[in-house]
Image 1: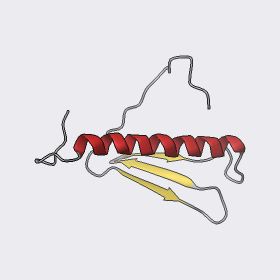
Image 2: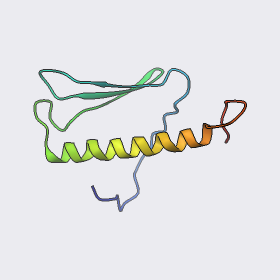
Image 3: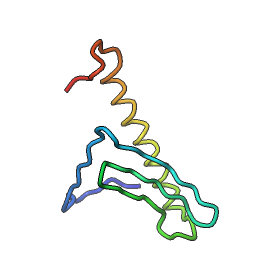
Image 4: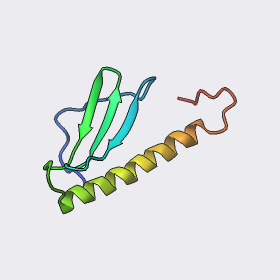
Length: 89
C-alpha cells in the first residue's frame, strides 16, 4: 500500500494503559475481526465485506502485522533491561 500523500483531517489517539487488549476473532461463517479494546472504547477491524476477502484486505492485514511487530519491538527495546521495570519516556 502506498504512503499517504495528504495529511489526515483527524487523528484519534488511544493509549495502551491498564486494561488495553487486542484479540483476533476468526469466525467460521464470516471474515475475521480484530478487536482492540481501550477501556470504554473499542475498535473493530474487519475486511471490506463480511462475506469475502480481497487482495487489498490481504495486503492491509500483512501491513498491519508488519507494523504491529515493529511497534512491539520498539516498545520492548524501550522497556528491556530497566531495573525499575517502568520504561523510560
